[in-house]
Image (cartoon, one colour):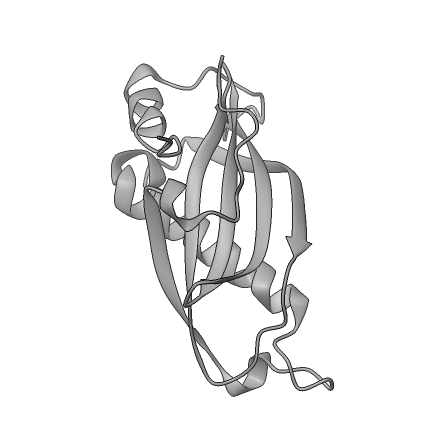
Length: 148
């Protein structure tokens, strides 16, 4: 298992991957800020985009499944319309059959939220967990945090 402990997910410089999301008017709730669940959607979209861009061969393979076993989020600041946010991802733990992604949502230099997603790698025919293939493992190792 490869793990990076004590990583501060609110530090933008650690992330090897990021994507941009546009804040839509429909994302705003009655308190006139972006709804917290929409921020979770931004994180989900970035996670899927990371998979599609960084290891498309595995993302397109229908015999494989990526099951979310756990998701946790911590909201740091309010987000308002209009604008854009950067959503960042890194691999904080790499096990035999699962991995944990660290995430952060930034507006300019302000960290809006941090999150962790545990993903289990499975066979889509059996719904059984399986070992992460070596080639995919290499891609995931490339996404470990940038620490100095």
